[in-house]
Structure formats: C-alpha cells, structure tokens
Length: 402
Ligand SMILES: Cc1ncc(COP(=O)(O)O)c(C=O)c1O
Image (tube, rainbow, N blue to C red; front, side, top):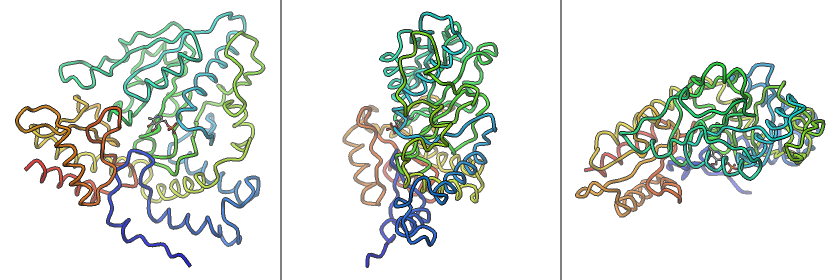
C-alpha cells in the first residue's frame, strides 16, 4: 500500500511560475478524493460528469468563486478548457460576434484595441492578427517598463480606436514581472469605457487582489497559478454579451468552433462536453480553503507582505540586484523578476545568476530561473507560498549579496 509522504515537500520552497505550488492540505484531500470521493467508493475522475455528485461540486465551486471575486448575477462563470492561450482566440471571436450582433448592417470587421505590456499580451496580439484584419495597438509599454527614465502612459493618452469590438489587456505579465496597479485600466476615458467591452487576462494574479468585475466585459484565467492543476480555464463574462454567433448575419467573425462559443458553455452549465474533472475538483477545494482563509482580502495582505520581503531584500543591494520592472508601482506581487549584477561592471551576470540558482537548489528553493525567453531570475509568490518561504528567499538574497 502506497503511503503519501510530505516530508520532503515540507522542506521545499517551490517558486515556480506555473504550474506552481498548491496547498498541501488540498492535495492530500484530493489524493483521497481521486481514490474514493466522499464515501462513494469511486474516485472523482471515475464519476459521470453529469452525476448529481459532480454537479454539486461544480455548483459549489461556482458559488465560492462568485463570493471570492464578488461576481454579480449579471455575469456568467464558465469553466472551460484550452488554457489562457485558447482564450486569446475565444475572447476575440466572441466579442467580434457581439459587435456583429449589435451592428447587423456592418460589412467589415471592426477594429480591436490591444494593450501590450509583456510577453502574454504580445501573444494575444499575435493571435488577434491571425484572426481579424483591424488590430490596433493602443499602447506598447514593453520598453518603458524596463527604463527608469521612461514614463508609463496614462490610459487617457493611449491611441484608442473609434468603436472597437473590445479592448484587451493582461493584468499581470507572468514572464515580465509587470502588474498593472489596481484600477489603472479603469482610468480609460469614461465615454470609451461606457461603450467598449474590456477584456482582461488575469491568469497569474487572480485571487491575489480584488478585481472590479463590473468594469469588464470578460475576464479569464487559467487555473495553474493561484487555483489548481492546469486544465481548467475560467471565463467570467457579462451575460448580455453572450450571443449566438451562428445567428449573426455579417461577414465576420469567422465561424467559431463549438467549444469556444461562450453561449454553449453558458447554456450547458459548463458541461457541453466532458470537463477536466480532477483540475475542477482541486480548484473547488482551493476556492473553499481561500474563503476560510480570509478570502481575497486575506490573500492580498499576504501577497503584499511576501512580495515586500523580497523586493526589500533586492532594494537593499542595488549594486547586486536589479528588478526588471523599473517602476515600483508596476512591479508584480506574484512574479518577482530581477537580474543579478556583476559586482564590478554593474551589468547582468549570467554566471552570478547560475550561482544563485545553485545556492537556491542547496536550500531546496526550486524553479527560480527566469523564463527561457528573458533569462534572469523569477520567483513567483502565488497564494500557496508562505511568508516564511518569502523570508527564507529574502535571507538567501541578502547572504548572496554579501
Ligand atoms: C498571463 C498568462 N496568460 C496566458 C497564459 C497561457 O496559459 P496556457 O499555457 O494555459 O495557455 C499564461 C501562462 O502561463 C499566462 O501566464
């Protein structure tokens, strides 16, 4: 009989950017549930997804998520698949369908506005360019992010289109360590906000701080950071913006694949086809735990404490460490990205970074290398990481700086 040991896990600090650490108590409960879910004699992944047992789980997960994020009734919560990447396509196609439904005489596709703040919004932009002809970059702040002398332009000065089908942005750029200050995007001109559906990718900071759902047409997030195993992607969308794309009589958008149509997910209670049952189960357990642990306000307080411990350690040694986001107000509370500098030249040193990663390994601090596309270091302090772990990392940074 296999027994589950957490001995090594308890000594390990997993700072991976996603898939990432999850609460041990949740995983242990899930380990039981995958063998025998609540005394049914069957594992959760062995039950019919249409059974009342599984439907109850799904309903509870939705209720808990609604409570955590203060989701109003006018919004549908959809549990989908395909990851954030699939939502790059789905958000656009569904919002083009909304535009088409509202403009039945239109002959050409409307513009869509994109805010580019890092690698993930750039990927969404790339997908948009594949799918529709009129993609406008409302602002590209990637170079300003790393430049302390550059100014991050206020939303009122972005180059916004006339009546676009949507504005898209990524609230937290997991690779670049950039996070919009709370409500930054809501500073868009009021007339624009009133007309234009605003869509946010909240994959890597959802449940770490409150988000004004009402200010958005749709939000989405993959589970594999603050929620659960990869496989579930949550979409929260204003119900009045959920349309049947097949009833639209304009030359755009293209026909939307069935599984990407929000209306299909909404009308079928997220059970149009077989859902990812295990990731949903773990997500449900995480939602319930977070409600007990002080909700999003509690998570936000902890995220501030943890990230401050690490940012303060970096700031104490400016000759050794350089956060890659130059503007403190835009530094992510979830993904702390930084370079280690050569003591003599003051330039990023891959050799010193390799040494630090090795030192982390000796202290069982894992998954701290930066994304392969940008290098440097990235330490992710998602909800399941602890303050103690953040302090351990901060102490190691201080030790390394000498
Ligand atoms: C902010 C953000 N958006 C989108 C994605 C893409 O998610 P997926 O790999 O699940 O498609 C990621 C992945 O890490 C992400 O961090």
